[in-house]
Structures are given as C-alpha cells and as structure tokens.
Amino acid sequence: MASINDGGSQYRVRVVAPNVNDRIGSQNVVRVLSNASAPPTRLVNLSDVNSTLKTEDGMILVWDLPSESFIMTSVIDSSSTTIKGIAYFDNTTNSTLPTNGALIVSGGVGIGKNLNVSGDIVISGIATFSSNLDINAAVDILNRLVVNSTFQSVGVTTLASSGGITTTGGDLYVGGDLYVADDLVFDEFTARNASLTGNLNVAGIATFQNDVFVIGTLTAGLIDGGEYWCQNQLVGKNL
Image (cartoon, rainbow, N blue to C red; front, side, top):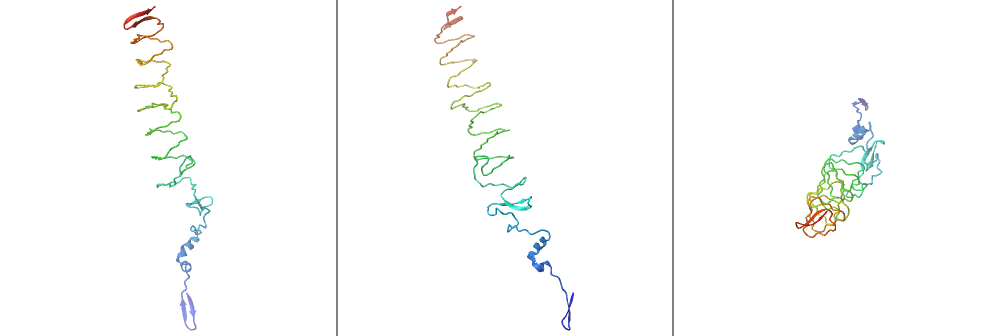
C-alpha cells in the first residue's frame, strides 16, 4: 500500500507486482516455466538434432545414448524391436543372393506360422523337414538323393531317362512286372519261373537240377551225363 499527496489531497494506492503472465503473455508461460528445469526443445527447427541427413527422404529420429541426443538416421540399432501390427515392405527389388533384395537379414529367421513364397527358393545349405514334404509338381535333382527309410512311388518312376547309371546298394523289391528295354546282366540269377520268347545264350556252364523241357529244336554239342528225351522219347543216354 502506498500514499500519494497531490498538494492537499492524499490518496492511498495499492500496488500489485506483475506476474509471469502479465509480463510475457499467456503463450510463453509454459516455455518460461520449463526453462526452470530443462531447456526447451527446438525439434521443429532441428537446431538441437544431428540432422546431417535431413535432405534425404524417409529418415527417422533415433535416440543416441552415447551422445544423449536425437540423430536423424535410417538405422535402428536397438537390441530388440517389436512390431505388433502388420509390417509392409513395398520395395519390389528381386533377390538373387543372400546379400540383395527388398529385405536382407544377416542372421537367422524364426517364423511361427505359414510361409508363402510366390517366386523361386534357392537354398545353399542343408534343408531339414521334420514333418511331411508335399510336392505337387515335378522334382529336378541334380545330384544324389539319399533316403534313409522307405521310398514309395505310387505312379510311374523313370530312372536316368537321358542315360546314366542307377545303383542300389541293397535289395530291390518289385511287387509287379519289371520291364527292361535293353540288356539285363546278372551276377547270379534265381527265379521260380522263366519264360523266354527269344534266344537263350549261355557262355559258361548251365546246370539244371531238374528236368528241362524243350518244345522246339535243341541244338547242343556234348550233353554230359543223364538221359535226354525229345517229345517224351528217349533219344540218347550218356554214361
């Protein structure tokens, strides 16, 4: 409270100190108050951001812990990043190597559900399938195919169609007929019945432990031992 004397009359005037709002205006109150604890951000003008890449499109602001400041970059180097929504990659760059394409992953990839690929797949390492493998088209295998269990072919199976050798290290079981268009070479041959429509040429010794029936002409040199018959008649006997 102050007193004013103007030459005969005395007035009492109450003097009130101006507040922050009166001095700087209501729009700057928040900024003044924030100055008491921390400097105001100048993020709009990028004056307190490492904005070296501000002329490039698509940059993001990342908190850099060593410098304790925001930097403009295209790299997120946090130990883990979680995306809860759907992530879209609009880039259509094709991939011909593990080091190029629209999405390049330097480490492993874990996928919890289905994987759908509309293009080709190139696997340079070992592919392990712990469940069934369903292939609905042709399969082209350049090198070996190793099957540790049973191999079953339901339809027609062609082996070495353009030439080559097909080898089986164990037994080969054929449940139906076996058609061979070319020569058939055996080390040993055991059969229950045999029907030949052409010639039978034996270069070595042929041993028959039972009767041999010849319907047509039998041309032979020396027949060693036993009787030989022709049309149920004994025609010779070697002693």
